[in-house]
Image (tube, rainbow, N blue to C red; front, side):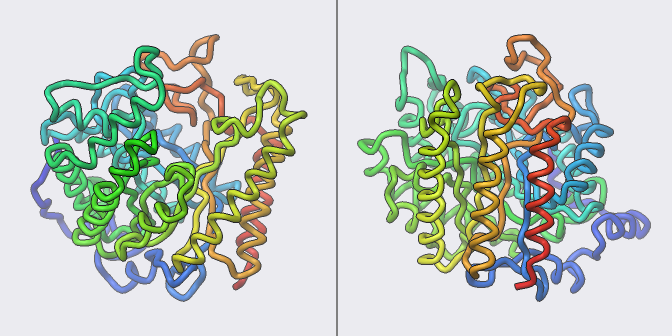
Length: 447
């Protein structure tokens, strides 16, 4: 149950919370540790903030004091990433309990306002542990896709129980994404979503006693994971005004509750905007949106073939370089920082097992990292990156590498994907070396 009451903290509890985050609630020390956007750069205090980050969607699940959690593992995973120089984590802050196939359970919420306090406390724990390690979180507050319930589930709750599954042969692409577009025009669905935004952004950490709004372990709130105006242009283009309105209203809502932290959309960039530059610009122009995001998925977008990486890698890499350059130009035009906050690549021969090699994955990571570093050195807007995703100690629980209902092994790959597809495992020494080298090079920059 989500506790909407304001806790009365004892002096001892308050001091413990301050020690965990290194600051007092609302104090000057805390204000100087928040990430802010300064033109096309991030700063913390007077220092430029650049980062090598990761995605670990399941952090709150590991942090939960429940049968599906594992707090000791979470601490080990954070230590392992910190040892590589990773200091920014993009994590899931909402999952809507859903009838959709391949949707994670438990959820952070149902259609009622009785939110899952156990899982929210898992988020509290993750943030407290990140704060101890000097890490910062980007927290997304719903999902365009089905694996955490997302927008389709909000529609299901408010449209009389209608929904379709992603990848349903009876409803082929882009039917799922086109139906999702109704979310942006549904006052009832957005109302439920905004209630949850208010609750989480306005939350006080139950373990440290620090309001989320005052916690420097948070870098940014994100409206959603990969919000799109629709799947097809036929639906998406007429839906653009509602899409832009949802972005502006939600960003303003978050800022009204928490003026200390950044807000971003969670967009893929051009790929999530029908390759329309003006769509990207309009979605990121609102004053409440602090920076531009982009995601890069060469295999998903058919830029490479996992069965023939030697024969398709170079052409795919060329498209990746163009895609990055296009987003650097868009961020420059907007006058806002750019983060490549998702990028993933398959293991050699398209295998999922951690024993398989990662030579092409490593080349792809170097491509992304070289682009980030080069643009940063040139004074460009690229401020950081988050690879998808940290799998760490996680291993698939079944030989077919498919997520099983009730799985608590948690890899970087969400429930709808093969387990091991895009994960970086703790045994991936060559990939870890690439990450470590980039993190060190980025931190060595002084301007």
